[in-house]
Image (cartoon, rainbow, N blue to C red; front, side, top):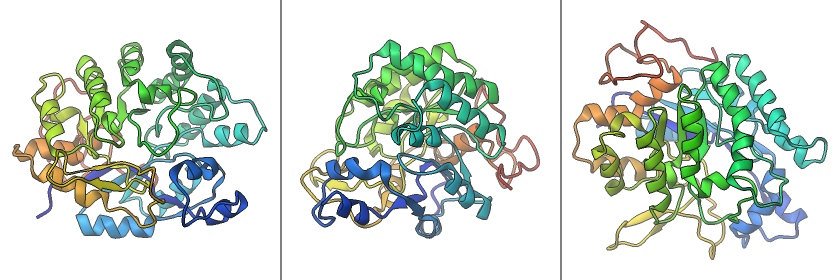
Length: 362
């Protein structure tokens, strides 16, 4: 049985890297490399189209659409090519990848204004449905960033999101394999910082990537992310890496509920699962620092959908989490009107308000 009427993964990476050649240049053994080694070479890698595996998994698990995100060395252009080949399956968000690349190569100095200008130009094409993953940042920075400085970097990006009526994404949670610093994305270690942005831009829908949990077993960042979502009508939580027990607290909160949860699993990322059967949780996503890099395509959807299957909740709520909220926020084409429970106080139109919503990149 399909788990929902219209299933959308809102956090998908359809691009992948062949890291072997870069490992050789760095004199690293690809078979023994760890996540810290990958972090050293990742931003110089050339991505390839991994959509064949993605489409296979979509067929396996009855996933109707995916929101494609660029990250690290990925490109907006390759995501757009994938969308244009399959407009019925994919939409894409964008971020300032060229500004990031040029600053890393020493061609320009990274500034939030340059990043905002790039995103403005991309959104102006009408081919992208939002911005993300996370907020643009200076990947050459070696200084610790405080809250005031980082929020000042984020505000020009939010101005662009407001101009275009676009969904914005702020990264939260850590995956444990890569080095943790306050140099690039300090907000990922401080989800509560997003409350300032949400209050200043109440008309901009904000999605907290990973809902505070990109990996590991601790729920500390999830608590902060829930605090922000409960305090602001425009903040949504991505939940695909949550295990079953975590959903209920958000569902019971009268200021969160099913209408503010989005299924998004980081499909395509190099995040394996650690099993600890007989304990709670029995398994969770985390990069394992003492083991070599995961080499296969991790089956995150199978695990994540089982977490939702265990929830004893009404189907209309599950339908919102699995796709209705995504369709509403991103303006996705849905097969029929009135498939989803109406949500009050909408920032964006209900899905199906029009007889058909054409794909953004057709």
